[in-house]
Length: 254
Image (cartoon, rainbow, N blue to C red; front, top):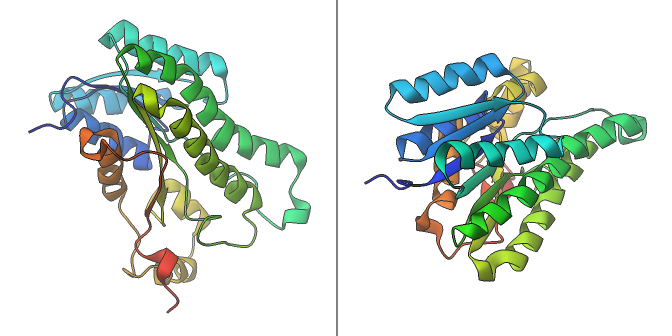
């Protein structure tokens, strides 16, 4: 049985990686999806793939840092599909990397705008529409970096992603009684464009692989399954969580 039949979902950062895999899985599980990212061509390709597999998708390219874009995504979901039940606010960036004392104010602010503020703006406009349906599920993509593990040179990334956990808890407490659940998924290393950009040598990839108890990195499809759980009624009593999907990185010391 499809777990999201009759549901409508927004997925940001859908042009690649975890977002793309999750959008496809949501559609395969019966949801109508609104997919968003900066790259229109990739979104068009994904929407065509979803349609070819019997699903329904609408897409809109834009910048998640814009509140107008957040509003437009909700409006598109309602205009095309009549409602909004699920939002996977997944778009993110590594941001400016390097010694913390050398990070520019511009770089710091850009990381927070993309990773944290965009998620707040998304939820700000998603929640009122969900309340009209009696509730819904919001999922943010945080990370194990800055939560259970730290890498030098990642201050902006770690701080902005850790902020999502506080946002998750605040929204969960504020809207739980009205049926809106809010959770964060915290991936370990996942084989995405972002991961390969940060780990562009065999030595670096071997090091990161070794940090995980499973001694491998995840496939985007594996993360999508965890997001599906949080989006579906299977997790109907789960809210306010920082859900580690990290291959055991948080407990590994060997």
